[in-house]
Image (cartoon, rainbow, N blue to C red; front, side, top):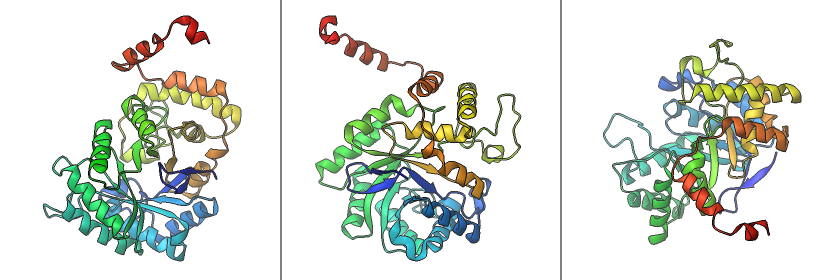
Length: 342
């Protein structure tokens, strides 16, 4: 297992992060996974044995059950992992039991600490954008949690590039702890992140945690262009995230060829492509079975050649949009030909 620095911090995390959305299966989340404690214990044992030191969850996953299960599964091994959770989603029926207000954050952190059976969170992430709460209020609350020792680092998820830059500006202006990483959707068949967010992450030295790297299972090789498949998997009952299926299956067609040449699974090729992207810090993998987990854990061993990466990049390339094509054109025309040749 390789380890990468998380943003500007001195913290090193495994290039694969174990996601626990499949734990519990309560309410809305039952369509994603319904793993009980014993099955979760087994998966956690396997990921720790494989060298993963990074585990991600959220308070809303199975209405808090995921946090409870991972807390019990870790037990005394808590100190061996970088534990991440999130705040934002609705955790009750009251008008203030959702969002990123100071009130909700302060209550949510206490509840998460109890469920996880720990006295600190390594990485506390806001789970989305709250249009009703000023970012100053959110960042001040998170900064207080860091100073109180309940949180060590803060991160964000599902943000636009302008929201990231605004939060960094506010943190700098008021001398507050800033977000050190973004958790976002990114796959070889969904490369929208590359338009505005990837340049922002690279410019501001923010880490990137990738969620749903197999596009909700669509890139696992289980599904075919004609609609035929195994009849199993998350997409059967939970068709998310949205994706351009024509482009996705064009990518799967190329991945199938490369996977056969390398004698690995299609899913491993999809994960390996992400691990070859310089902006990616850690890819979040989840599983409902030990077989799925072991297949995903083998992805760092898959090395893609320059020719294979070129084939994959060409079939999945985003159509050019303004102002990207203008920026590219102006950059290319910045110097005379004789200077560029040197």
